[in-house]
Image (cartoon, rainbow, N blue to C red; front, side, top):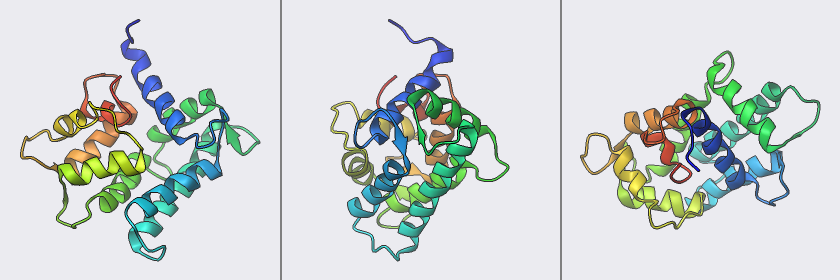
Length: 183
């Protein structure tokens, strides 16, 4: 079965749901987002008071609250369908938090361990392995796609553009489509 252009964003978001659903109960709640923040902090051995750790934790909490707001539900957990819908609405609503910009910068700052404002292959591989627990053989192909200028590293601009594409592009070959595996 091939994925139509209109379904690509949903496929990416469904994969994100699966990756975030830490207890595999078919729902996301605050604990799943809290665990995501903790995975970054643990993977990068950040002190909880490190500004990058605080930025990741704040981003996870605000993102979660924005998803709940956009889901239009009274509860504190989301189904896969509610998650997909809420994400689609949250990324286009910049009235409170711009998910693509704020999160992209906070994540970049953590991945860029040496602080040179670029993500090396080793830094990206660590991100995939330690945060997203991805050891897929083709996972590093995404590095090449994200490195759009071919200089051997991912700049902040390339990374932020990929985050935008992940949430907004229906193109299955767009670099941002690679964050949770090939569509």
